[in-house]
Length: 227
Image 1 (cartoon, rainbow, N blue to C red):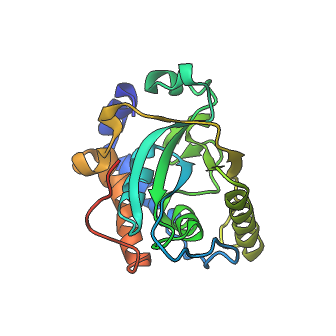
Image 2: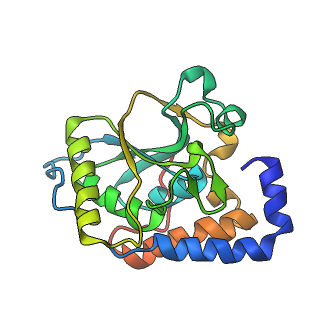
């Protein structure tokens, strides 16, 4: 969050608390398992998934608490390397989205399960170019796929959810090829864990982690993965 946006949030704390609470409830949809998913390998290995769904603080915090996730890193995807800086991305003109690179072990958690977490508790996939109070294309909902299999699973799950009409509005999540991922500045990493009393984190991101624990008790872990 930029300093000006954070200052506005602090000055309007009560109003923002209401907004964040409503957004958190919308994000906590109970969804079915993906009908299409990757097969479970016999041995542990590592795969990468990249998701964008609003401010990367909360998305990172959610995936860091998922069993089978090796690391979750905040960063930028969708734009050029020269523009992969927070103050530049914040202009909303770079093509970048605040994203999280998730390295996971498919023997412990599948790509489809990560998608279910993403759509259930990590963000609201029906908000176009925004999440809660954060607006701009840098906060859009995107699944950046790194293989044809990921593309197929993601598109199939979106179609499955749309057909089931589980959200009050249509899903606007983009499915786009992953061209590159650029890690964000060090002060953005593990932000929710390091700053739990920050008003933004307290009212917007910690409820997402709580929803993860409630909805996915078999996937939730109290400790966090690295980045």
